[in-house]
Length: 242
Image 1 (cartoon, rainbow, N blue to C red):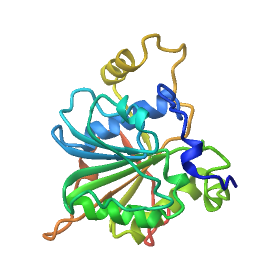
Image 2 (image 1 turned 120 degrees about the vertical axis):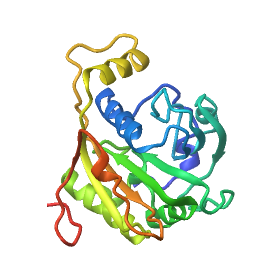
Image 3 (image 1 turned 45 degrees about the vertical axis):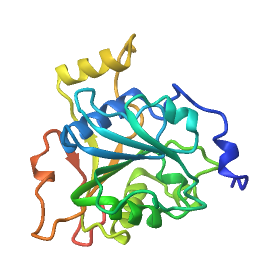
C-alpha cells in the first residue's frame, strides 16, 4: 500500500523499539537456545539492535538491516551490512555454505520476493544448517505485502511461510506455535532483558516460527525430535498445517 522507497520508511533508527512483546521474544530466545550450536556462525536478516540470541552463546554474528545505526547498536554483531531486499534480494557478499544458521524475525511479511531471499539463505547455509523465520500477526500494515494482509489467521500465515521454504529448497520443514520455558530459564531471560518485569507477565502476541534444515547428503537429520518444550503444529501429508 505504501509505494514510497523502503529506505525512507526506515530512515529514522528505532533503537530500543521491539515489534513484538516480551513473551514472544522469550520464546524465540529459548528456541534459539535449543537449535543453535553455542559457537555457531549466525546470519540475522532484517535485524536491528537485538538479535534475541541466548546470552551464554559465543556466536559469530553477521547482521543485515535497513538502518546502519540500528545495526551498530547490536553489540553482539561482528559484521554488518545494509540492503533493500525488495530491490535486490541477494546475499552476494556472503560465501556459499558459510553459516550454521540464518534467522529472520518479524520481517518476512515485508519481503516482496520472499522465495528469492530464502533461496539465498539456503545457499549460504552449510549442509545441516538451519533457517528460522519467526513472525506474529503484528505488522506495519501499509508495508506488508498483500498476500500477507489477506490471511485471516495465524494458520494462513504459517502455511504461506511453509510454502516459501519449500519453494526455496528446504525439504525438512516444521512450524512451531509455542516454546515452553522452565522457571530458571524464564527468570534469567527476564532479569537480563527486563529490569522491571511487568506484572502478570504472559505471552500475548501470537508466536510462530518456521524452521527448515538444509539437509546433508547422507540423509535426514533428527534435530526436531531432540527439542524439549517446543509445540510443533500438526501437518497433513502435503505439508499443510491442519
